[in-house]
Image (cartoon, rainbow, N blue to C red; front, side):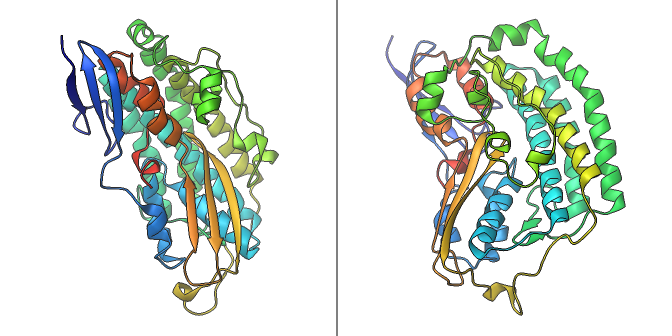
Length: 367
């Protein structure tokens, strides 16, 4: 039997976003694999260097569509670090709430991802519908369901209202009540266990060598989470746990996402209780905001996304635009290096399982 080239692309229900993999297979076994991040979302770093500081607020959320708020937070925190801007305490608590809501929404989206990969479409329907409740919160808070442009240098665009807080509490209660259903549908499902356990293995040494973080690393037993090892905002003032596993397989990675949802719910409830009154932002420019200049300097900030460590290295030369921006995409190692190095030798049907459980986000590759 000869070698055959197969195109695994966005039309497949197991593929995530505008991304494709060119596979060279013999029979059912992958011999070579080459990732192609696509042509829709790309070149963000250079685009940022050609736009004014505040113009970038509309651009950066697109670097990772399922979880855009992490880019807003990294960008704002880098500007604030260089310009030495003091963010109001209330604004920092609100940022935490938004980031954890985004984490829950992204984890709920991972259930449709794995459902499409293995044919469990009920999880796709449930995850999408429940995630939509969080998007309703974002729409009421920011005016947008996906690209929020809400976290800005100096704080957040506007304060939480009593209506929004009520929506958040009710949504958290609802999602918490749904967790046993997900456990029974997915993780106690014999077919799911057969398809995911022992599949797409990533051991501790390989994860460290690649630079994999997030659930990919925590599934090997290392409790590495930026919120714990280098706390930002007020994560050091709330109580939560970092779930880990030791198997390093696809099942462990998906299950850790499930276990992180109640931890995020716990964080948000504490934040709502501990958040003081006060301003939601501070003005950082006088006159035309589009002519805002960040003082000379450089900074690196990183936060914990659902895919792992997400960072921005930013340099300002004192002008109206960033001089240099480099993004550490959390899914870059397992998306780019991992696909070329570790997909060969696997079966065709297990390729989407790697992509789904490793949280491939294409724009983080060709950024």
